[in-house]
Image (cartoon, rainbow, N blue to C red; front, side, top):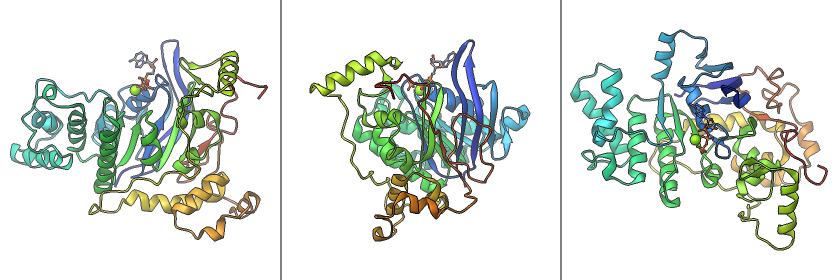
Length: 383
Ligand SMILES: Nc1ncnc2c1ncn2[C@@H]1O[C@H](COP(=O)(O)OP(=O)(O)OP(=O)(O)O)[C@@H](O)[C@H]1O
Ligand SMILES: [Mg+2]
């Protein structure tokens, strides 16, 4: 089973350039989470920080109970063995064929015999559908195959945590969906805590159990997928529709005059370029029939039911639909009544994303929702 990963008030800068501050979130064990954010918001930097390749200046990164920012280098070495990582560019060795690329971590980090290495390597190549291509060089195969080879290599050490940076980059939409299916199947088979970094809207809508979003150097939200997919928060809404209308601009942040000019253009009939977001959220992808049931999904169902009363009303409805509750029971329930049913000491509370001091200390602090996440953004129409 995967292990829980928690960051607390994490802050990372390069020299005078602050990348993000006060990032606090929990990736629940064995669940699939997606971290969204416009280009350049520091998603890859976050992923590299989790594995100890980059070192945030402040905060904690607790992996299976150990803070990797303060532990010894030998402890860090052991913790790193829990990770399988698919980097954004695949990071395959160009002069090695797919077999040797996949076998590389086993040869580097274990004392296994070649016969055992062969058995593991072929098993993982089969998992990602690359049997028959093991003699090919990375330069001789398609982008999708390179991604799968990178995944096979990430899998050979039986990771408890999978970090996947932009699984869709360079792939067409159909191959992206196949890759998403593969990630769900891998999660079902090895129950690894999975973090996918992406700005792909389809992946966001259909893959994760939990979602977070980085914007303007902060974690805007982190919580169950239903919370973000039904969110009215302008940054999240704009991102998930791909529209030009909203706080995100070409250079990440817009000023209010640009926002007003764009809103006026759209009001005059100019397309905002976004897609219509359906009222009901898309169902989450399931493992391919014949695969084991995702244990992470079972744990998640129990977890979200526990925190349900603490979530926004629209998210509650979406979750209860997904949990198979009788719609007659909740469709007409007013938000006030739902809130009144909340247990006095909910294990998770909706909390400020960037304050840090009032983080709940319960077992699953997995919903971080800032009450005023766009306070630091340019305002439009006096909002
Ligand atoms: N090693 C480094 N040294 C200095 N600056 C860096 C380093 N790595 C990343 N940065 C800077 O950190 C910022 C965030 O980069 P990052 O690659 O994490 O963005 P991202 O959200 O992954 O973007 P994309 O969606 O385009 O992949 C960028 O401004 C980048 O230039
Ligand atoms: Mg990146």
